[in-house]
Image (cartoon, rainbow, N blue to C red):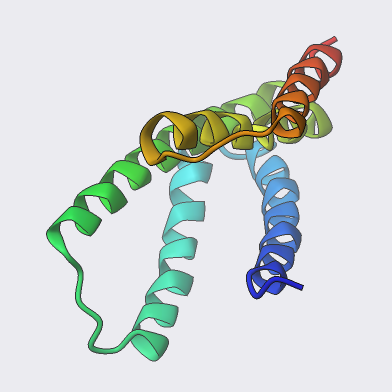
Length: 136
């Protein structure tokens, strides 16, 4: 098992909890406010991790720029996700938004020099079919 797999499994479980909690939040709270409260709580967790396990770590300028760009994309996506949850079905919104890996795979090829095999391309095609089926 790859060393990243246990962390990915934890992320999968906690993000599943996040999706259900987010749905419940948008039933009684506006999507923007729910997003802000979620990010505030997440900041506490990330801050704790950073203070306890990354003491003395430095941040490079380029890394900081990319982190801010990623945070802006995360915030915009999170607001869109919460808006989707407040107007649509949890299973549909979470399933379609979870296909973000398609965008990441394409951007990885364009900007990072990653490669895609025929199987990878078939998987992206299957994801496109999944979006079409889920949106019905």
